[in-house]
Length: 263
Image (cartoon, rainbow, N blue to C red; front, side, top):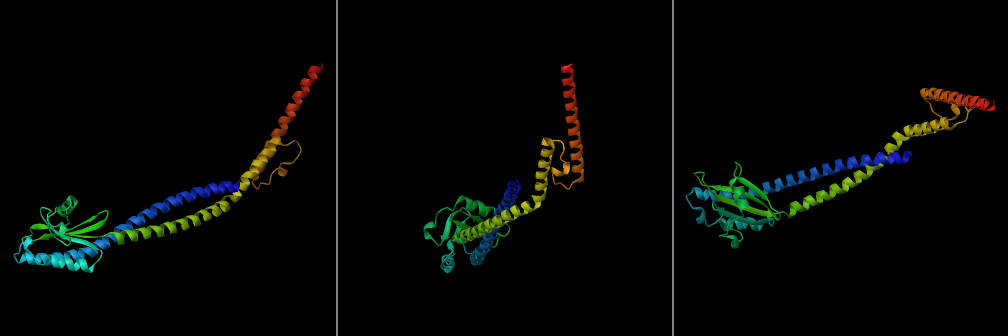
């Protein structure tokens, strides 16, 4: 009886704690994903800003964005030095690609979400996107009159981010399973220890009451149970006394009925 009850209590505690661990783990993964994503974005933002500075310096000299000859070379250098960079592109205010490390993109329109993100860039002129296959970091290009001429966009690999998040999830899952096993064991042992005496007393109480109900006249109440509660002992004595009085009354009534039938 006690083992079954303790097991049920331990199971409830384990379920509650496992839900708490699951929620904590989920929030931890989301926080890790966001933090690492922001770290990678900051890293590639530095590259994008460096290229932006080269471009805007020449814009300040009076050159048109479409006439800056060394943009492809600068972008190609960064692409060659960092294998995690997929492409670097420069597009104008209409969304047309003017320069790209992949020349097949030149003359094409960028995705609408890029244009929307560029137009909604923050005060520093930085915008970011996290797509299914890549991350995108962009910087707004402005001339000396602070006119918005377009944007530079850098696409980088998500492999490092996804792999890191996956490894973090695996570590959390393993840690959570170990914690859950320890918690379940401790909950079972703790429930058995905490509820052992109350359950034992309840069992004795049940046996004592059952003994009072089923007993014959004669045996003392103290012989029917082993309880340390004075209140219950007093209750048992009164109950047994009432039971004896009721039995005597029933016997007397039967005797009187028998005498009447005999007469």
